[in-house]
Length: 69
Image 1: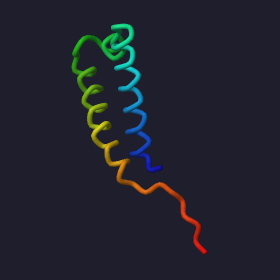
Image 2 (image 1 turned 90 degrees about the horizontal axis):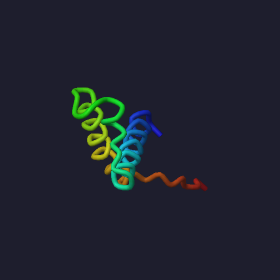
Image 3 (image 1 turned 90 degrees about the vertical axis):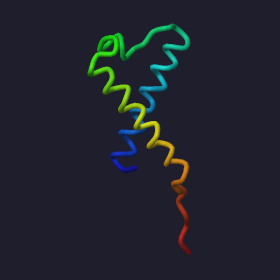
């Protein structure tokens, strides 16, 4: 995988874990770490959102390995 793909995947996983914590326990990890809608927490939310949009492109990629005969 390219570095951008790995970075996007990590950010999407962080976002998914955060939403899981919000849904199950009403606990916002990003807000707990960086404060309620501080500038840095907004940057984190924005980066996770951009990574999610970028991750949509993973559906169009052909990741299967093919045997060349």
